[in-house]
Amino acid sequence: MSRRITVITAVHAPSARFLPDAYKSLCEQELPAGWEWHWLVQEDGYGQEVAPYVPEDARVTFRQGRAGGPGVARTTALGVAGGEYLKVLDADDQLAPGALARDLAALEADPGIGWATSRVLDLLPDGSTVGFAGDPGHGRLPEGSVMRFWQEHDFRLPVHPATLFARRELVLALGGWMALPASEDTGLLLALDACSHGWFSSEVGLYYRKWEGQVTNQLAHSARVERDARMALVEQRALALARLRWQYPAAR
Image (cartoon, rainbow, N blue to C red; front, top):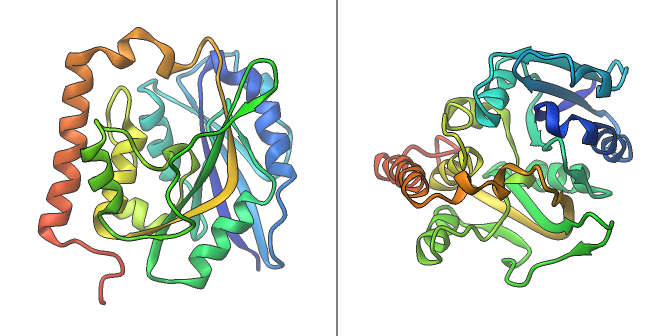
């Protein structure tokens, strides 16, 4: 029987048109013998616009639920996800070749690592890509290192939460994504960092699409009062986990 990686995608009507590109990038992934992926596409709401873009494939499950933002959609999907590992793939992004296999190899090789991330390139409207300077070194990210960087750099992460690959059991134990209007993926990443070691792959793992409808481009996303409130909650959760010494693996 094959072992499974569940790829979770939250989608709403404006981003649905990018699903075929995300699916193509997923189909191009090559996994070791005995492994398979299953794509769980969760609509944030009940509408008619998304379903036509969902491919007909036995490896794809499409579900709908009450609208509450991408964090709520992903956590709703988490409840029906199977397999040992979870991979995030936003509806408007694309996996780079080999991304799933590299993530899997890192966590299979070291049971002490709870999650993995990878290098990102922005995918611009003209099809060109742009990289970033300042990525961490390839390899293990010690527990708490992401939080320290985030605190010292005005709430800027050293790795991208849209590339997250994690042990399903660990994400379940942390309650999934935070119930926030934004930064819910930052909240989960910092919670994972607070209680487990991570991994960073210096090879490109994701093409992060930049487009006019992107939630992070909206004015509300950067409004100072709300942003400060989100960051305070994200920080307090991670610090509480660290203080309580809730750790993965349980015995060290």
